[in-house]
Image (cartoon, rainbow, N blue to C red; front, top):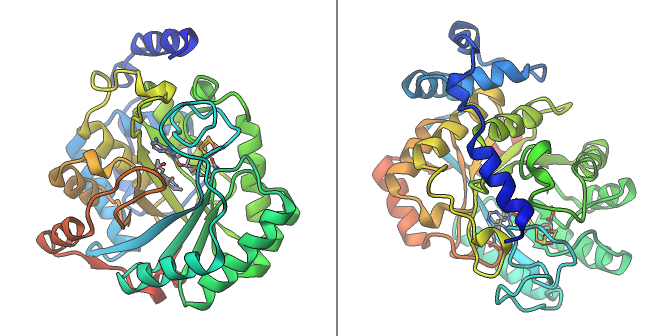
Length: 358
Ligand code: SAM
Ligand code: DTB
Ligand code: SF4
């Protein structure tokens, strides 16, 4: 890890704990109405984040039930269509060409392979198929190929999602015309902490891509990563930025850092400032701030106990990545996930509901 990242971690550890700030109590009665709004103040978000855990979970579950069936989980499956060799320097990512994290630079998958994978995912119960590429942004020839992939997966009768890096307005439009439903582009962390994690593209670049995606009429999938050494204040700021975008993202993936050896962020000690209760708290705040969005337990489930995941569902998470791999790292076995769903009396959200909802 480089010096600047270490310094910031130490600095963040000294930040005033959020529950020591004088923020007052959230207005639980108004929050219980669960009306989506994009004018949250940062102090409102901080006050929620600092609230007593039981109040927070109760409120999140109330809000959740106004917009969703609490038994249902939306199931997405991921496929890395272009793995490794990425020019960017995202400090968490094993696919960056700058780090020796054991991920090879592979060519873009063939169309037939993508269709086969999507069909398997559909047979397994996934309603959304998310294709990811390790690019800063797609080049014209690459666009032609992903457009064909999006069309083919859409023809299978699945919701489609793509995550191909930064997009210009015309590229977003092209994807929309191909039948893409969602575009995933994460803010990753707070604007303040961002430069400690990524230097090859700015926060504004990310906001600009999200604008192009919205302008094209694509639905937005946007969230972040927790456990990268950021402070509670940074997490509240990330959630505030997500919840005050011009529209709430339809899907909000909350990733817990998967520490891959060789990446700069594999060296940070996340055990001290990150715990499962904190993770569940983040889910609950996301649920209350973005009441009608799908909140997804994304990377990091492999390291989470069943109990943490159950609490996260109680706090309003209602989507998972399902399948034994994320992009390059492991996800829980599908059999384990099926057992967990069964133990909790939960079921996959049907495709038609996913289409109607966000
Ligand atoms: N290259 C494209 C981009 O960065 O926009 C798309 C793929 S990228 C892998 C998608 C997202 O995965 C990242 O923005 C980040 O939030 C998440 N991610 C990547 N590596 C991760 C890790 N080790 N732990 C947790 N989340 C990770
Ligand atoms: C998101 O927020 N998480 C997914 C998806 N969007 C593309 C990716 C997680 C990647 C975890 C690290 C890996 O498997 O390479
Ligand atoms: Fe490249 Fe995306 Fe990984 Fe960043 S997160 S290094 S842009 S693949």
